Length: 215
Image (cartoon, rainbow, N blue to C red; front, top):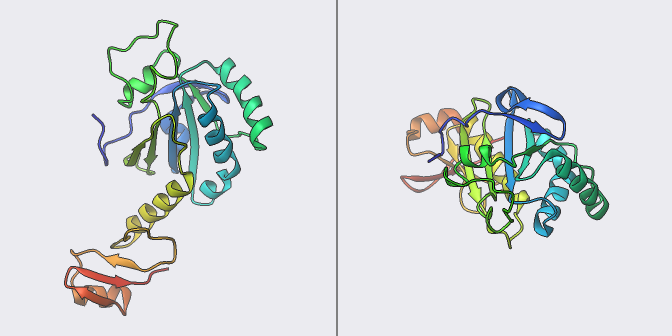
């Protein structure tokens, strides 16, 4: 089973922009790998379109997008046309072809014994609905799986990315419903004296709960 802080498994794949190696594709960037159980499915169509609309938000945070669906490149290319027609957005990020289920299994989205018998449906691939946030060291920093009937909240993924990038730079954590520019929590491992040096002013609610502002 994959866990947070595990190294993201590497793979070679056929995609809508040609063959690529996943780790090489990410390079020194952060990455979002988000998967889909089947092409030409309604909820996923809206998701891919929305991600295309907000791709610049991820790019500005040094984060690359890459999608995956359990179908062929030819199907992906045809689906892209539908997405662009119905969602008014051009899908520029790559879509991985995973009709042999190799990557879905590699990322524990399907059991190892699953086979591609040519009869698989979105329902049989229902667990291929995960998002993996990967840092520049190729470590998995967040995993999230949605049911097929619930469209994913990608604005929340941006919020999580902001939080993780901030907490990777500074000795802070972010409270419930935190948004960029809100107050943050000083991690308990930092003493009050060190907190004064690092952050200047801060307020103490409890010895373990201290708030401050950071840039």
